[in-house]
Image 1 (cartoon, rainbow, N blue to C red):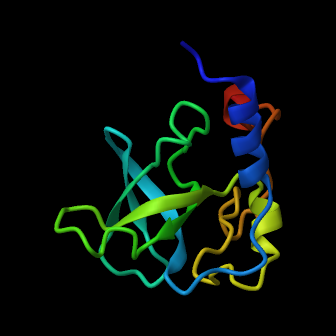
Image 2: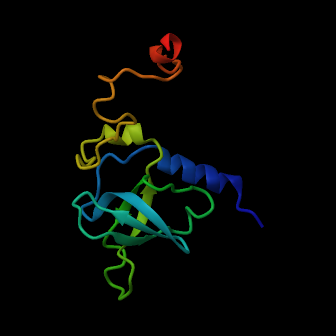
Image 3: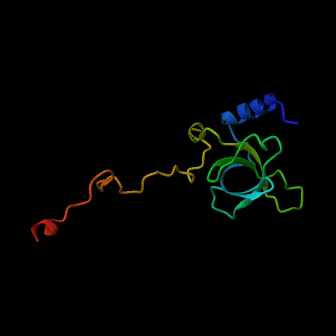
Amino acid sequence: MARPKRNLLATAQETSSPPASLHPNHAIARVRKAEGKNLYSVDLPSGAKPLLVELPSRFRSQIWIKRDGYVLVDTAAFDDRDNKLDGEIVNVVRDEKEWRKQSYWPPEFVKKSTYPEGSDEEESIMGKLPPSDDSENGG
């Protein structure tokens, strides 16, 4: 039996806007890859070793997490347990532009440009004919 639509809408509403401030044990992390079984490998802005975090059941099959996306991780969620998990995903960053405006957004997670550096200096050859070779015509 499917979950009621009100649960889906409540979850979407909850993740649509960033919180006003972060708890001390919460951190924004970049998703490195999905490990399977609702486990994700994430990178913290400090550059430490990747963490293995769990996606709680309220997000499963409702919110999709893509690689290189951002999530809010609670690093103290599994401190009392002795297992391989380093934390739990508390929130999923859906409107990245809105989250980047917050004061707690880590400067290490700069937005990647879609164009390589120095590309504006080189002339684009998109849609142009290949250069003509005058030696073929004069020969």
